Length: 224
Image: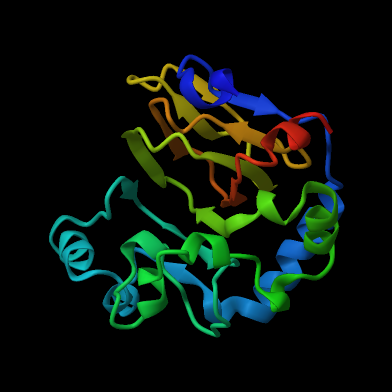
């Protein structure tokens, strides 16, 4: 556990447990067809009222949001209450529109919503556990999109590629000197407590499930 949470020298752990790429694509295709109205995009001003004022102002004036640059968006699958609309990241959400984000136990209530529990998602929940899918999102990066180099907390994330291309990378190091091309069908624990970023240098989108895996279950998942 000390290595997982305190050591910043490692970047990615590839789990032994693998997923069927065809099932991943099927889930993503059906998801987009059914829930396109729930897509949130940082670049589109129509969504900026859903963000905190200071976050929205930064995007309007500077053309980026935090570390996000380019065509970056996605879907929020885990939320404490049912919502049928585009949801921003909870940490950047307008609290007048999303007062539930102020709940001190927001994280504990943030499970995958019932409407998204079909196909491969249900299978993953059964195998990996509910606590592996806290704050689950689908993050999409269009061609040319990137996340600037930064460090997050020591909370660990699972990255599960849905679609990608050979020129889409997750980077580690202050100068982005280590690059991983994450593969569809694989599951990765990424050390976002070290310097990291992303870049999609390809000509097609890349989309990942990103979930926060709870410390109580992480060793069991690594052992699968």
